[in-house]
Length: 308
Image 1 (cartoon, rainbow, N blue to C red):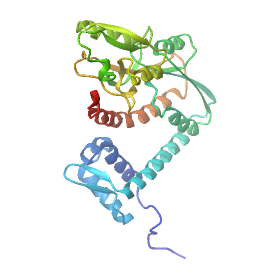
Image 2: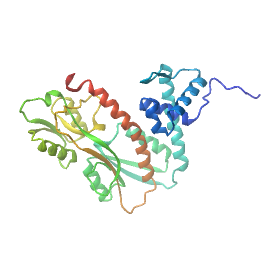
Image 3: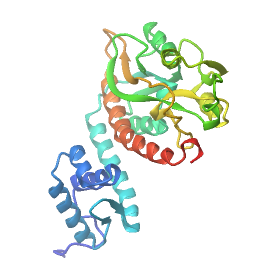
Image 4: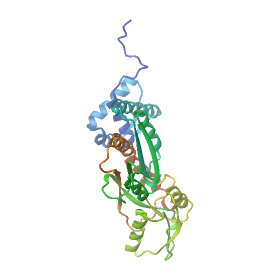
């Protein structure tokens, strides 16, 4: 029997519309979403209107200043993200190389995103012939391991040479008000041991500002730095993406800091069929959340900085 009517229980839309919906939600509006999906604001608005008409459900509450999800919209977007992830995995799977290879990846601990393991799991499902070895540590140690042939690629900061720039993000002071505002007292610092690029930039900034300091805690990992900062043992300098949502951005009275670069380093003159694919895959997955997470963190901490 031929069914000519659309079923109300089947999704009748395209992936482009779903990408537009997710972009509107994550970018915070139609105008901001245009750059991400490369469509005009009016085209995106029409897509959303047609999608809501097909579903017979309102997904977005729109005002002249903001866009927010309805309860139905929250549910639908969670499914939309899963559909898009599966579609992207399908493309990866059918275009993956056939070689059986071990890809040894080093990730500077302070750059590893919280969802790194889920990203790697998605990559591994789409590339069953690629075995992954993941090592976390300091950027300097990872780059040395790469130079000694112990790793195939390393994601780290600007510590090394011949790296490819992936993106830039600000360095920020993070810590509690009590760790900052002591008239004339040295600034109490929580830092990782040398060699550490962020440690040197901290000292350089304080020297330029003639700000006295003392090293209160020397922590051997980013997690240890984060724990010490949360405990109020001092302030630290971290990339903005390494500042957790329950950590405070420190005072504007502290010296200005430079941006930091996130780089990819690969073994020179070596063929690794999965390296470039993993770089592009991780870059897409991390960049998709980086700007949105930065905005959310700034908003979350702005009302709590210095205990306000």
